[in-house]
Image 1: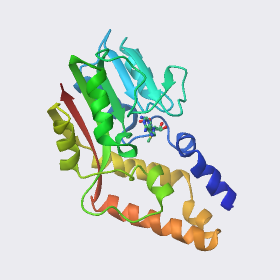
Image 2: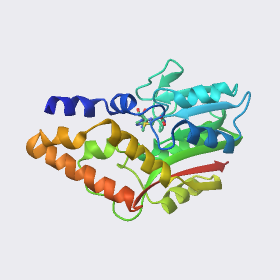
Image 3: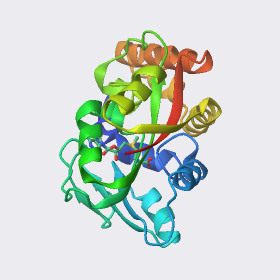
Image 4: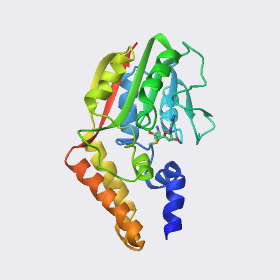
Length: 232
Ligand SMILES: C[S@@+](CC[C@H](N)C(=O)[O-])C[C@H]1O[C@@H](n2cnc3c(N)ncnc32)[C@H](O)[C@@H]1O
């Protein structure tokens, strides 16, 4: 049973991809569509999806006839190249919209924003969504924090300030707490993790405690999800 947990954590995004129907962020495809609208993605727009995972957002952008490609350390689609948010394998001034959904919290946000700024054209737009925390994030094991996108999560105000400090003009900020609650319910309805973890003794109890802490924080709004659209 423990081997199952280790295998799931060893390749967390593949595991989540099997559990969640569609994109691996709260709000799914609809949230991506709204973000693409706000960033003005249309026919011919050059979109770079940073941390594109399985490429769901790339498909949506391409449905609009945008010229979309992705970057991910472990690309799950042939529309993407291997790379990270802090060292984009992309030319300076070559992208109209940098999209990055549920990714910045996994990396060095300041360096990632500087890279987005580098690759965007002078009229380029940044469209991001991310986990935010109010106050202290629940204390949970590092690997679990990574899977739950809590490692580098910052407060809503700090995230917005980081975007502005990187030289962007913040156009709109939206809260998506309901989407986060719905994603939590979707995952909980698909995995009976209470029963599975109950079979794993002490380690299972620690993971269960972590999950309980995160669920309470989501319920109380201490963990949230926001999107930001900004221009250069
Ligand atoms: C929560 S998933 C989101 C995937 C996709 N954006 C979506 O919404 O469906 C996080 C993604 O970020 C990628 N990732 C992790 N660290 C990264 C980094 N330093 N730079 C770029 N992407 C990263 C992971 O491989 C994974 O595909």
